[in-house]
Image (cartoon, rainbow, N blue to C red; front, side, top):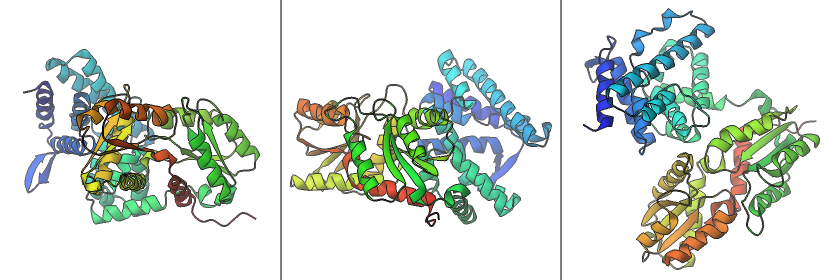
Length: 449
């Protein structure tokens, strides 16, 4: 067995001792063993390239859970949180002991324990992936039993809390996995009623829309694409105001936020012009705004790259580019280029997710990914099939050096039969996508008197 298989086998041996049995296809099986198998199966679908550490942590998330029952702690909210904290600590310790017995390195052992404890949940993509998998398994396999134990209003509250824990990618996956019909109706009811009552009563003409971005790192006209979208949306006169602010450079995020509040907005709607739900969107952006102590409600949308309508826009742009070259799309490779990262997997995962969605249309010969900061690098992907007609499409939120210079330079260096469609961030259709997201969130409340 591989080291990973050895660890999984030892975890399964421990969970097979669970005296609580459930029927699977008419056969009684240990409940926690079944749970761990379901977790691994969901991980394989949700994160097919998961690291060994993440696979171990997912398998061991409920390791010997039956030994610490809920009734050992006070049956109130404080007792519940003490129980959950104790579980995470014990699961991590017991798993670490198994890993040491299997001669797993100290670094990997520490990493697995950290994931099980869900440390740095909002900034660690793998910790979030574990949380996503647990939520998806709950929705598919266990929510139906919960719904039988609670009334509809209580269950809707549970589902809303579950939804808030999940990344945008996991939320899309939750709507695609097979759910019990009653659970699906409750999920739909939970999502329909999850809008903040404060936002329900605020019309868009009282909302300041802020397009927030990292900031282009150079180029002839830094942040020109961002400013163009803000200007076009402002011209539609739907919002109280529309502005754009960046975390690095000008116009600064803080300056545009202050201007929006001073302009009389009753609510700020912050739309992150980022391609993945990573460190900047989950931590830096909300922390920067929270630190300002604003007197109005602030709503954060999911980032641009997570919008389920984005793959359709990318497909349209790629098809248009191919036809401009008189290339038959079914004979063309589409190469989606993302930033990638040497630090975390969020950027690459987002790029692969959108590529998979585009590939489902079946209109291109193939749809592949390449990256600027990790393998497979753009120039290598182009050289590998340099004689194949290739449309290159940038999965970037701006049009700075990455889009305007790095990708064209890679195409030139590879000498491939390739044409660059540009970055999806430049397409004017993004404005409709942003406006649609705002209308879905705020509804159609009448203007204030």
